[in-house]
Amino acid sequence: MILYRPVGPQELALIEEMGMTGFRPRLHDQPIFYPVVHIEYAEQIARDWNSTRADTGYRGFVTKFSVADDYAARFEKRTVGGRQHQELWVPAAELAEFNRHIVGKVEVIAEYERGQRIAF
Image 1 (spheres, rainbow, N blue to C red):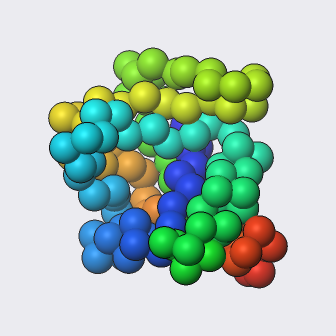
Image 2 (cartoon, rainbow, N blue to C red):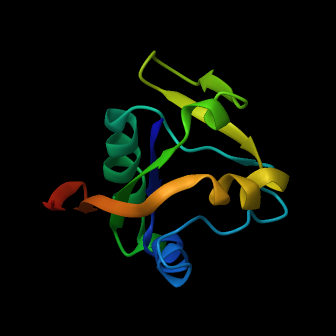
C-alpha cells in the first residue's frame, strides 16, 4: 500500500535523522500515527495547513512510502471528511513495528511554501 504523510520541517528533519526509513515515536498526547491514503489529501494538508503556519517556517512537505498490503490491512482506515480524506490509524505503541514494515525509503515528493508548491 502506498501511503503519504504531510509533515513540517521539524518532522522531516527527524525522518532524515532516521535515514528516511521511518517515523519518530509519537508524543505522549499523540495516541495515533495517521498516514493518509490519497495524495490529494496529503497535498491539501501540506499546502493549506503546514505551509501557512509560522511555527513551520511557512513550509510543508509531502512524503510517500510503501507498506506491504497484508500488514497495512490490519489497521483501521478512517474517513475524516470527504471520501478522499482517508487515514490509516496506527496506534502509537505500534509505530516502531510499523516502521519495520516500510518497504524502501520514505521520500519527499512535494514541498510547499506559503501555500504555493515550490518543488517536485
